[in-house]
Image (cartoon, rainbow, N blue to C red; front, side, top):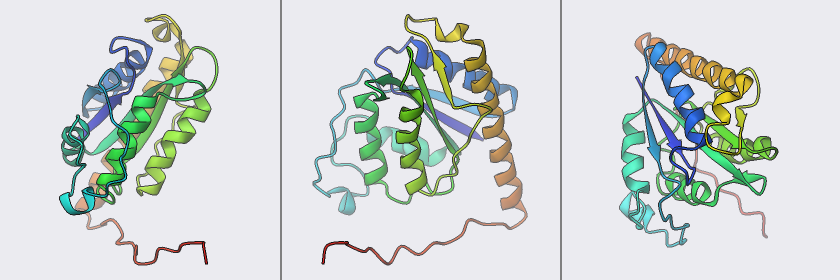
Length: 206
């Protein structure tokens, strides 16, 4: 089993990375492999609404989203980490996820996912809420912890000293590992994911 952790911070060695590393370390102690992928410092285009992905099966803009999509296809779970900018996830994270989820609609169904937000002071819960919407529309079970999945720090290294925040990251990782193992046991017992109907799309304008 493997979990991908997406670091949406422009600071590859900052507080968001520290929170994700705490998750990764605990996943390892639970017997689950992990990989942290840094995307926050890359130039990331927003969705151009070209709909080429409907024919290509991937995003027409090739700036790292497609490579990450291939990694996620082979992984069992996803954790997205973001810094908080203006009480919302960083812009690079939003652009990245818009294209990742739109260009690969339906491909991530039933993979457990979790959001992690790191703030100086406020906006973390609002940011987690934004990220969770990507997961819920994609039929991804949302993994929780013993508090909201956030940690706090301004200067690099401060989040690692947020004792409760790091505890929350470890508990999140344990819950993720537990759910992945439950899914694996269920699959072995013949319990398969449901096939859901997507045939109806209603436009509210009449």
